[in-house]
Image 1 (cartoon, helix red, strand yellow):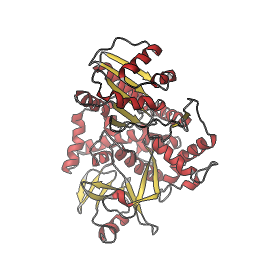
Image 2 (tube, rainbow, N blue to C red):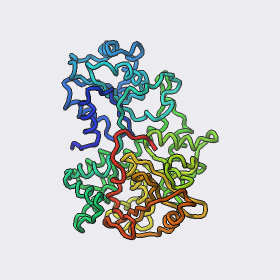
Image 3 (cartoon, rainbow, N blue to C red):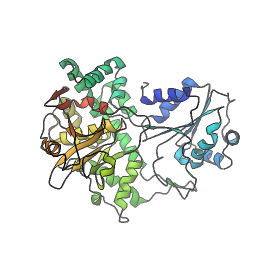
Image 4 (spheres, one colour):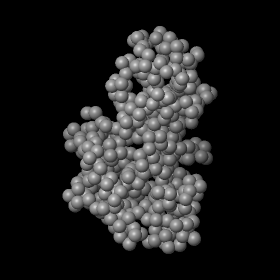
Length: 456
């Protein structure tokens, strides 16, 4: 099945802009980059030249010489016969471009060639030193960039057949702060629980929509997660030979596997020293940074005070770690978890998943997330900049203790300034005592969707 994605509209707008630069699509593996790009190209160009530096590494040599369009095309034609090119209706796709740094650099050279369009994509573009010993400079300011993530709840609803009209009911209720009917609220709650189990990997979503089989869908997500782990440490030297360091790979695997256990603890803070594996003093931190740079995890940092600008208050060595796709986290848990989620009878596991799903929702909208915690035990689940004001997000399954939030709000002079509170729980939207409560399925609306996203 074809999935409607946010990137579809972005690519349409990109092509219609007469001053567009080469497009650079970044994002975690299996997020659907290649499929969406190919589909767009097939529908909008008469000639599509697809090059995968991962599947066909022999193409890399074509970029060893001059990087102007004509030289690149001539060199490529020797290695791979090309069809006749049509000015204004030809697109070159450079897939897994991180494997060929000079192809990435070529985007700067071809930027002003209006005869053809160029779209590059890569899964490891955030990894510093991905190609060991390569000194190719990185192009700056020569691309229009899109950071693609797995499907968010809005895209999941599109996949389920819902139109923008049905989605507008959620947005209108959020903007007007008026409850949906009980029927609508219950339906969207049920759909959101499905999304929580399925996650956003396109293959998993397609399987679930087509078969309604949660078990097979979970197995797909687990297989994808295993495939991602098989790629841990996938770096190569300038000589194109893989450089697998077994200790490094072991540390990365250990860092990834620890995520559920730390989220299950009281303060959910990730302790780097618990990562197993031999190596240098900072090897554990390097493993976490590698996972973040590949788009597999996000780090949510503690702040000294919950005050704007939040990014200036970051406690660098204190953070929570979440997977960038909620389905990945669910797949790491034991069998039976999805049944408990769907029935609304999750038990003690609520603490792990409800925070993680809000992190998932806001991360995929381009939102910057923080939290606030003191050694005294005072802790705020998340803090965001919402409409220019430091805003506490208390994430609960149904109800819970908001003592910490009330303490911070009652003492603005002590905690950096005025804050507001939004409760996110399994309840309809409403305002009580000046505090906004929203259901989990509305959380993505806290940030306007942004196509050019920065890794957290």
